[in-house]
Length: 275
Image (cartoon, rainbow, N blue to C red; front, side, top):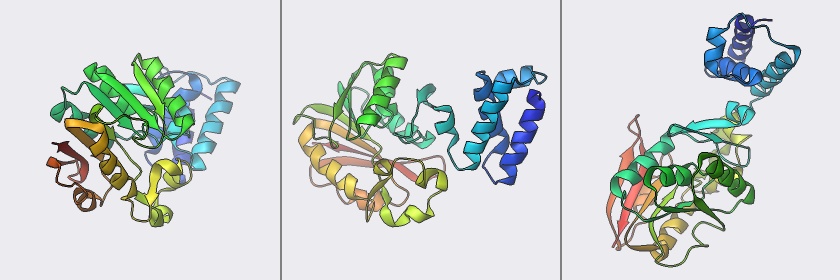
C-alpha cells in the first residue's frame, strides 16, 4: 500500500467514526508511523509502506478510533513554536494557554524570578525561561508530571528548577516576582459532559478542581499573597465561566486586575498586581 492509498483509507475510517479533522489526523498518524514529517507524505505519495510501517499506522488508527488523543499517540504537541513531549501524566497543551505567556511578557516582562505553579508538561516554565532568560522554577504535586516537564526543559535547553509540592507550598515567602498557572478548573459535576478524549484520557488531578471549579483558584490567590514580592504579578488561565468567581477572590492588596479574552472573545486569562 502506498502513502496516497493509506491516507485515503485512514481518512475514511476516521471520518466514519466522527473523529475531528480526519484528514489531518490521518496525516499526523501516518507521518508518525513512517518517522517522517507531514511534508514527506506530499512529496512521496508513491512511497510503499513496509509491513512494520503499516502495522504501526494501523495500530495508531485503532487507538485514535478508541478515543485516545492524537497527541498521546505521537507523544508530541507544539506550544509557542516549540515541540513538547507529552504523556498521559500531563494535560495536552492547548493554544489558548499561549495567552498566559503573552500576558506575562506584556505586563511582567521585567520579572526576575518566575514560578509556574502546577506545571504539568512544563510549557509555561520552559517557554518563559527561553523567552525572558529569567530565573524560573516550576512546581507540581505529581512526580510523573515533574519528570515529563524536566525532560522537556532538558530537550529544549531551558534551565528550569523543579519542586515537588502542592501549588506554592515549596516556595519561600516574598520570593517571587511572577506566578503563572493553568490550574484545574473543571467542576466535578461536569465530568460527564466532557469530550471522551479529555474525560477518559487526561489526568483527573489536572482537570478537576472540586464541586465549583473555583477551589484551586481560591488556594492559589490566597497563598500568592505570601509568596509574591511587593509589586509582583499573578497570571492564571480561566475556566469557561470562572471570571466572575475568580475576580471576587482578589482582596484589598490586589490591583490592576485585568481579564484577557481569547480569539473567540471568551475571558481566558486573568492577571493581577499585588501592592
